[in-house]
Length: 186
Image 1 (cartoon, rainbow, N blue to C red):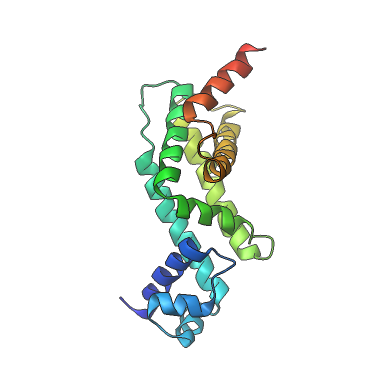
Image 2: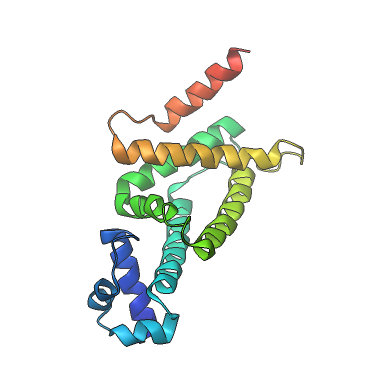
């Protein structure tokens, strides 16, 4: 493994252990076994390295989440969304540091337009993926794009609740029950 790869791995470890805002270049060097000059040579700056590491970590997180989400292709949309949220709950319990890092990185986007742009692009892909996962081959239509946005909005809130107060945070079943109650209250 070359210095570039070592730096990325070290930066990912630091993101999980210290968070984006609290990771220094020296932390990355210590975690990667490289030197300060290699950060500039391979990435130009600590921020560019952390951005690249966060994007890689988010890709790995996406792969982990895909593994955790088990959706029955013959299930209806509510059962599918319940499976998505259940997979998220499982992933948060198994990888809380990764989920804390994903929340932490959001706080950095107001000062880091490049990171904001890259995360927004990933979010757009996520909305489409969640829409397809929940609706399957349902016909195209006006509300379809909003389905993925709703799923992701709930995931964001569910993440915060699960990280801060896991004992009282809702389960996937609770959330789907709430959706059913809202629809029935029409």
